[in-house]
Image (cartoon, rainbow, N blue to C red):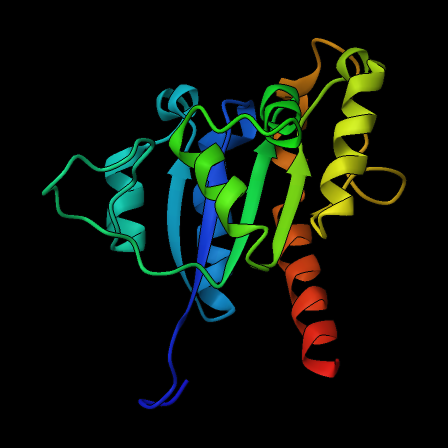
Length: 188
């Protein structure tokens, strides 16, 4: 990037699932592709991540709640969003219009504004067998959200085996999908 280039801002929304503890990998990969990154955990995900390390790595506050009046720490405007790891709960709440926390509020507001959004789930096969998940994914896709779910993308794991999948969680897949979305939009 040259001194006249503006850095693009990526919001990484993190849910309470095992891979959340390794979200620094995604941040580092995104930095390598020229993204400025803001990490926004769901309230339950705060216990999964190293907040001070992520503040140092990103240079931004890690916030899971709305700011209080007069509180500093406004985040730069998002140019793109990655929701990963995306849990069954968050996918379903978002698809059904629930915005009961800061990350869901951001998703509810920014996606209709056209902010490119990629979702990488982390669910087991028992949860995936519930038809509500497929309906929720279809709803998000109808909004233009790129949900990386299905053959060749994220495939659910057997219940109780999520911990064995942490080292193979495909963080880079989210950035590749985001690059594809941005390339398509440039060509339109």
